[in-house]
Image (tube, rainbow, N blue to C red):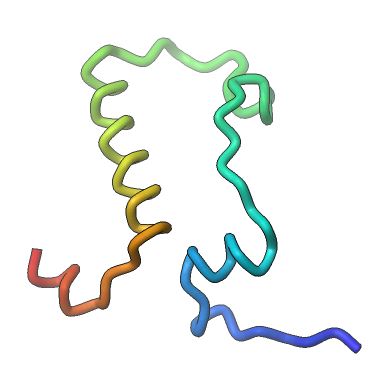
Length: 71
């Protein structure tokens, strides 16, 4: 029998653990997402790197909602 899990009770860390998700850093992974796209500027790359680090940190170290609102 399949067990249902409500999404609102999961953190990114829970999903990673329960479903064995792993970060894929291979540039050839999902090639169709990056083919034929416009060139990204150095400034945009720096911004995207910050977003990436923030996402990875939030997956590893989730914060409570009030902490996020305070920032």
